[in-house]
Image (cartoon, rainbow, N blue to C red; front, side, top):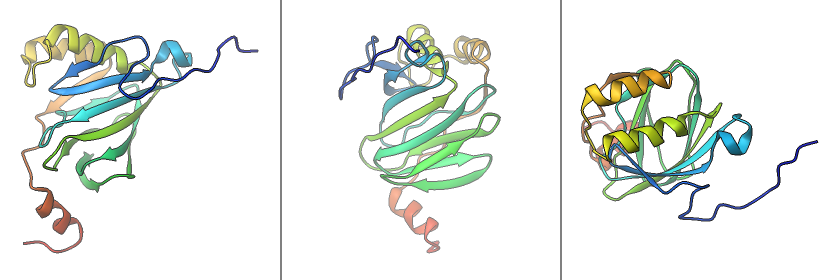
Length: 173
C-alpha cells in the first residue's frame, strides 16, 4: 500500500522548486522523480518565438511533448514534424531530437519524461549556466554526459510559421 497522497500543482507553480531558466526557456517542474518514485517527470515550459533546444539524444528517457500553445517544428531522427496546439510528439530514448517554436509569440509545452531524471539535468543547467541562451559548451557538455544526454548539434535555424504550415500541407514555395 502506497503512503503517497494526491495533491495539486497549480498554474505558474512548481513542485518545490522555483521556475528554471534553461537555454532561454522558462521551465516549471510539475512532478519530479521524488514525487513519482522516479517513474516519470512532468515539466511545463515556455519557449520564446524562434527558440528551442540544441540537437541532443537521451540514453535514459523517453520524452513526450504536448503542445499547449504555439506552433512548433520538431525534428526526431531527421524527420520534421509540425505540431500545433493539442498535438503530441514522442521522442523515444536514443533518438536525436530538437524542436523550435516557429510562431511569433511565446509557446508552451508540457513534457513527460520517463523515467524521471531529466528534471535534475535542468536544475543543474539552470545553476551552472546562469540562464544563458547559448552557454559555454565547456560548461554544459559535462552536465549532458552526467545525465546520460549527448549534445549533437545546434538549435534549429529560425523559421517562419506561415512558411512551415504551407510546407507541411504540401504547398511548397
